[in-house]
Length: 399
Ligand code: SF4
Ligand code: SF4
Image (cartoon, rainbow, N blue to C red):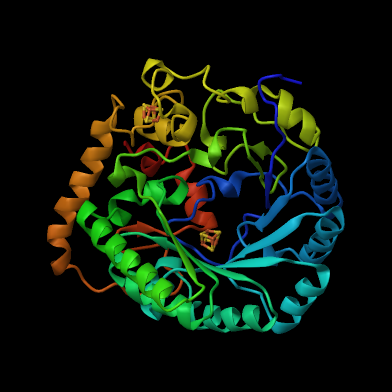
């Protein structure tokens, strides 16, 4: 065991499948997901859950893609419950019928996180490239009827930030216990769509002020719903404490069994992540070179290594450092001390310039089966294969 690693994972995120009926333009699944190997089967997932729990993991998220597409979800939930995990289902809602909600409750599921893409049918359906808004509204009611605590999650970007007050109203109406307003993190599909998704700093500030006002209103009437505003690190010039530190708290297992410190890390060059088909969770977590690559602070450059914030933000995000600076060991370019901060400022300047043009834009319109629209590429198998083909021009997009 590497003595520097110390603690076991607290959180296990089981990405059961990358299959998903939705096509969100900001999806955090890898852009090349269609080239990944076969999913772990039920027995392999049960073994992984057992090993992670034996190591000390307590919180378990079933995620994807859409985990409800796995017909062994109830069996995996029941197994996780028998092991003593606190279980969360992270879902788009597609496939959650009343019967399935009851079956998951009976299996011992503790908690459900339901994603919405917006408070309006038009934008929800446009950005996910599916007609799902009405279905999601019905699923929210089913989740409450089944007696689950419910988080509504909404990824925020320049299209839906002006609707933030209506999104809060919607969550309140639906009886959400918690609303997570997650400003887009620019990895995966969002990285490819960054020019279209990125809001201006002013748009973010306006939206945050509305969130603060809603928080105060809810508190003043003793309303229990909590709102989390996930910091837009580009605009705040403050790196996020990504995954609470590399290999410190979170263990992500991809559908094909690859163990990762975060769902994006697989794109980083030079790291060989262990596959849990061949490697135990204990060996992967404590002893693999990949999980030890950015643990602690010995890997940091002088900027982070001499900074008082290094134990609070862990030097920010390695994937962001790679995407923006071309070096996974660089200071996160979101940080104002980073030598590459100018690249983030250039993206924000471009967003501000684009905002001037917006009034002339055609209204967004959902077109069934469309692979692109509104300057966006929607997530899907064909787009995944095209974007990850070495010869494709889109792959060569520069920061
Ligand atoms: S972000 Fe959208 S497309 Fe991606 S997994 Fe979630 S629901 Fe599916
Ligand atoms: S220099 Fe490094 S440790 Fe300091 S605030 Fe920036 S990213 Fe965090």
